[in-house]
Image 1: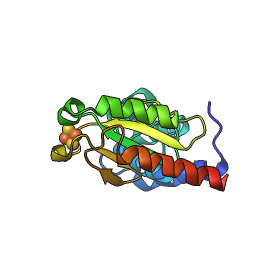
Image 2: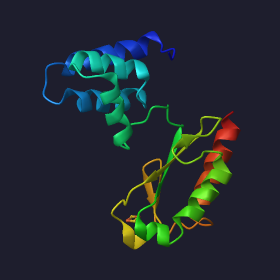
Image 3: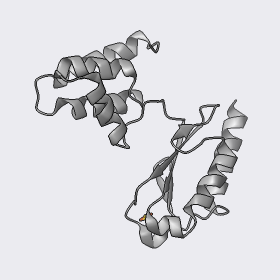
Length: 164
Ligand code: FES
């Protein structure tokens, strides 16, 4: 079992208490835990299961079904690359490969230094700008592997290294 600090456990307990007895509590609880902690620890899944009267396996199933939930802490900088059809056709895979090369983060994973998470997402609804990437909530269109995305990542790396 993972080791969670006391503060994280208190946050989970407060979220579970807040939603217990409401309709559809599992997703509400998961949403709040993801928002507060940046991921869903297994301890949270167990507590949510007990409070909601469902099995831990069912809660785990919900976590893995929805891409907004993650079971690992996110990196400091989150990179989303759209892998919808339009973006895929315009080179999203090459972009993903380049991002992995630059950051060390694999798809749906976090780099060993904790700086970057890389997520492949479904269509972001901006197909006219394909391929599309989002870095720390900022959208980049026409983001082939050699354009703005690389510049932004290099800039982040330079800033983080200077601060280290
Ligand atoms: S397929 Fe990427 S934005 Fe639609």
